Length: 394
Image 1 (tube, one colour):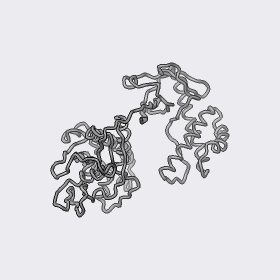
Image 2 (cartoon, rainbow, N blue to C red):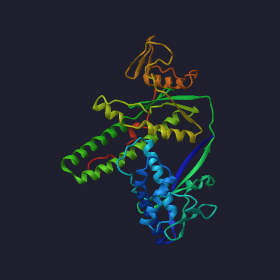
Image 3 (cartoon, rainbow, N blue to C red):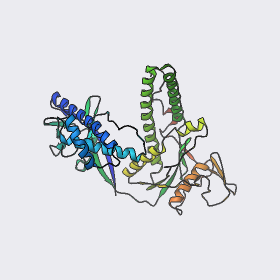
Image 4 (cartoon, helix red, strand yellow):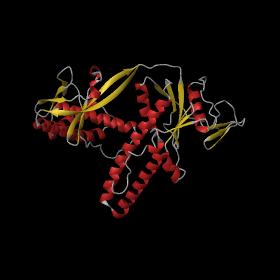
């Protein structure tokens, strides 16, 4: 059994505009409290909620006397979590972290559901608890509301939303079948079954975005152009959304190609440092994020009753999956010592599979010309008809 956490955003509906403004003011003060607590945590060697509370609580109360005590505690917990994330990501900061957005993780002390259907709730504000409601849309109605955890609240475009997490349990279905995946750049995913995923059009689209970013950065450096700076920020935002959406398409296609397998085996690329030999290779390696692919693949596979395991990538591209020595790789072909020509990426995917299970049968002999080329969007020639092209003035 494996637990899957799914989150859904729902818009909060208020009885009066005054209640909405009270909640906005409360979240603003909670953000201010967060920024007051952060320097105290920055000066500490280790993060302890009790020690931080003893140092920061009175300071926050003196500066913001109207803020409810529970929101100070939520600010302290948020600061502890933020600095733990900074430390786990091995980031170095010279000044205390600051919070700009309005958001807060809720618990039963400040938030309570008022009915069994969980369409109404009460929440603590500056001077009173207000009652609010949410509207259940079709997708969220079909979920099991008995498995919800504590929600969080955030503000977007002056509207307030709840993020409601659902803890869903999916049983792992063992079929004694596994599939190996080899990740690449031109060939995004290659499977041990002889399928590969390619997407030349989207990679070209990404190169165009990077070219436009370089042009805008040049204008900012030379002319101090404010419009170029604003356009660059918009372009970065669109690029992030495009890349994440593209990764979801690649993952969905990968799961479609591995529907018969209960275990998906991929390389553990964490900690591998790739040197930048040339400007072209540096651009190629930044075209997609394998870690994001692995993260999305893991939770989507669990939702289907599958599991994702990782193996070390050592020599998976250099060895012959049949166990013969002396083979050589030339481009996308692998030439065995007996003269047999195989697809290099499929051969690597089979090696990855055999690192997990050396005795697992191979359903593809990986001979050259036997691979099946797939596009993450289905039809490669039509995949970008509905996608925007980011150019000057867009």
